[in-house]
Structures are given as C-alpha cells and as structure tokens.
Image (cartoon, rainbow, N blue to C red; front, top):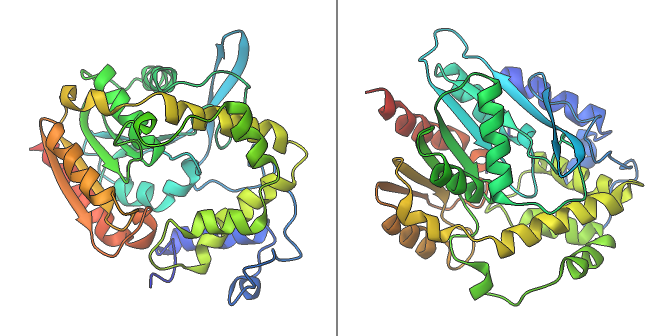
Length: 334
C-alpha cells in the first residue's frame, strides 16, 4: 500500500498544513469509523478558500453569457534549468487542480513549466449556473494559454479532464504537442450505455448525498485505500454541509449532464498529436478493453496500463506514473 499521497518533503509539509486547516487529526484518520464522519468535520466552502493550494493561485477574469467569472490557475516555473516545454494538467469531475500537487512537483523538477487550471465550476474558480460544454472549457483553456504567452503545450487530462484534453487536442492541433489521457472517462458515448437523466433529476439525487455515499464514491477509485485520501472525502462532505451546497450541487449536475451528452469518442480518429494512454488498469470491468480500443482508434497512440492500480494512478503509484509520464513527454524534445 502507498503510505502517502505526497512523498517529497516539501509536499509532505503542504499535506500537513491541509490536514490542520481542515481540522483533520492523524488519530481521526487511522482506523476511522467509516459509517459516520469525525465530529470535527464541518462545512467547507465551495470555493475552497480554506484549502491550501501547493503553489500561488492566480485568476483570469472574463464573461460567459453575461456572467462575470474568474478562472483560477497555478503557473509553476521549472525548478532549476528549463527544458523550454510547457505541460497543462486538466483535473477530473470530482477533483480540482490542487490534487495534481505531486505531479506538478515531478514535472517542475524535470524542467517543465506547469500550468494547472481549475475549470469554471470547479475548485477556486467561479461556480455560475450556466450550460457547461467541453468546447467552452477548451476555449477557456486556450485563452488562458494565450494570456500566459504559451504557443504550444503538452495536454494531460485525468478522468473528465481526459475528455476535455481530447476535445482540446482535436480543436487546437496547432497548440497540442503531446496528449496524455489518464483514466479517461467517456471512452465510449455514454448515451449508448445508460438511459438519459434530466439535470433536475441529477440535482435532486445529490442534494441529500450522505457521508456513506461520499465515502463509497471516493473509495471506489482505489485498489488500496490510504488514509491520506480521506481529505477528499472531508472536502466533499464539507461541501454538503455548506449553505452554498444547493448551488454546488446544481453546478455538478450541469457538468455531469455535459459528460453524458457531449461525447468525445468521435474525435479520436482525428487527433493529430502523439498520444499516451497512461492509466490504472483496475478502473471498472470494461476499462482496460475500452482503453485498448481507444488507443487503436487514435492514429499515433501508446498504451500503458498499470497493473493493480485504480482510477487515480498519480496517487497510488506516483513514482511509476511520473516516470512513464516524463519519459513520454521528454520524447518531444528529441
């Protein structure tokens, strides 16, 4: 079992700060009763103001259908000598840019500039009640790169972020140097796999989300659970206790509807960038098969399935994950 999400000394300190800020004591995590939340767990703001990010957070301000919004991001320079390359990390549906902390550290140490946005509707970015789309998220990300003076970048997307990464690479081939899909959902069109639910039904179902449901949802991501992962249960449960939860629940429902109704599998044959599918193999009964099928569809694709690893390989096996990721990205420099 991996004993910590964050293994380097600098990030271990960050993890300790996060635990302290959320009133999570180590003795509360070890051997914790999984049926009830710790008594000290209270509300967490939907803007994560009390959750430390591993690097300074900046904002890009703009408007979407008449609503003023801001998009949070981290822009991390290389540690030491730069290799002149940029990597963009795109988060999943149930996470936000903060969870890339160790990946940012590994890439920065390898000479990469790393840009990590919180998409609108997530993390420290605005949470407007609007129709969400992968096309708009891709455009927002493109605009962020333009603002930062970035002409081309490798795009890495995890889970829902993999769908966004695929849409970005399809839409902006002139910018995308390499594409990495990490346990991407939506490898098949969800409309073929399950019945449609209205956004209102999704919203109503999540309003009374229980602690047990939140824990079960998070635990299914991993082959081997580590108590360090409890901080994400803490955050999701804290949202549920926040007076802003109805807004957050609706934003989540709108983004889930986007995932269901806006497939990206039809872009796969048209992706021009060299692509790596780098994923934990144990991510549902059909995942490995679908990953192979997806890789066969993308013109220039390499597949690495990590045995006995689940949905979040950058947490479960960070050393191997980062070694494979950097090896692939470094090939762009040859």
